[in-house]
Length: 397
Image 1 (spheres, helix red, strand yellow):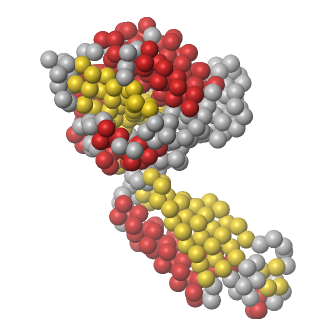
Image 2 (cartoon, helix red, strand yellow; image 1 turned 180 degrees about the horizontal axis):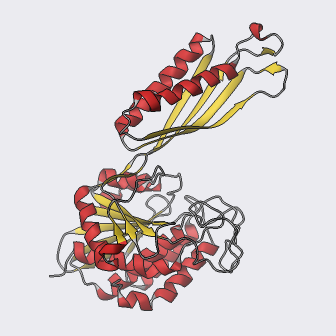
Image 3 (tube, one colour; image 1 turned 60 degrees about the vertical axis):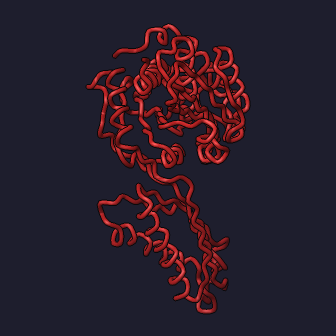
């Protein structure tokens, strides 16, 4: 492992920053304190900043030399509406809010890189440091793009990184092509005709219609989709009725669809709508079908992925880099940035949870778990990765 020595010396400061952020989590589009801290640190280190993109976003600008080339490095800042179970000293001070996904660590790692890049400037060009709000369902990446991120800060490529529990500390993982799935949700209301449960022939039972639709939908995945094209269709809620002797007027089904490609998503949404509509009609019921596309698939670009593999190997060695990491059906709004610009998103191993201090919750150290905590041992590793990426992408003359 070849970490950047000045960053190692700065690790304690980064840990203090990270744990302060963890203790003061802020939800999507509420990251005011976090953005203030980021802005203050960048300014202290002589890095010009622009605030306000995406609401609470912060962009730092580090220039050196005369090259017109530029790249972007992105970290997310928001927390989750989770009640933390940890009781160690840096546990959340805000009830019902928690950094349960490690965005506190992502922010600290990019700040570590910012400090080194500003101090040493061993590159030729411009590095844009993108601190993004609202990754957790708020599509903050899209908001920053809509607010002119890539017009105001023209860059040839953009890069992202996420900690990954279960991967060994000090390791990286990536794959070219689809790495994370699209995130989509549906909300379906079946409208029947309520009646006495002892006289079902006098009504139209929306529950039975819902059951028929639910079963038929699964054939989209099992019989209409190419088995080589991954898709998940999960009904996560069914609501109907209020009494044992009443057939209700309506039933509601809610859930999620995940795919790695847009054509497969188009197929699933179209067939879900058709099956729901025609099944309801066959029973004399009506249906209101709503399908919302949240995040697109995250698709790594081949050239930039190959480049990132070289960077990771330069930092942690070839044996600690997995170039065939299994894609996940989880979603990430960095996908919007990769739709607009070439780039690559990588995983950095967060370990199995042994790093957690006394007072951690009894749950696993997994993302979105109330017992999770970011592994501070990653801070110099992730920051070194960002620095080497910038130096290798924009080599000094």
